[in-house]
Length: 70
Image (tube, rainbow, N blue to C red; front, top):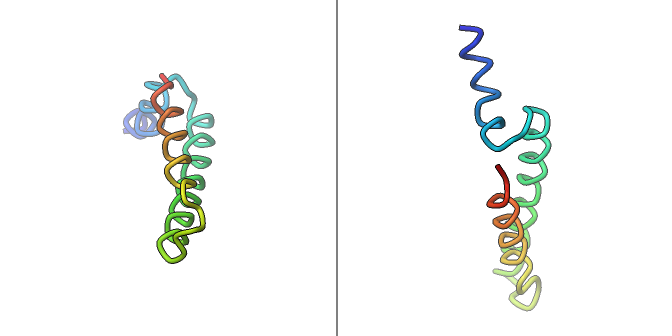
């Protein structure tokens, strides 16, 4: 049972070449950047002249980062 719990926290990080801590930092930073992109898109929806390309640029950058791992 302990091994199964341990694998739940380490199998995916290992599959992308990271420790649990490294993966935690990457995923946490990623989540805050997604929130930022979402907020930029929400503001843009209300005031179209603001953040015209911010969300799409952020998402494209995050896509490149996630697809160049592991």
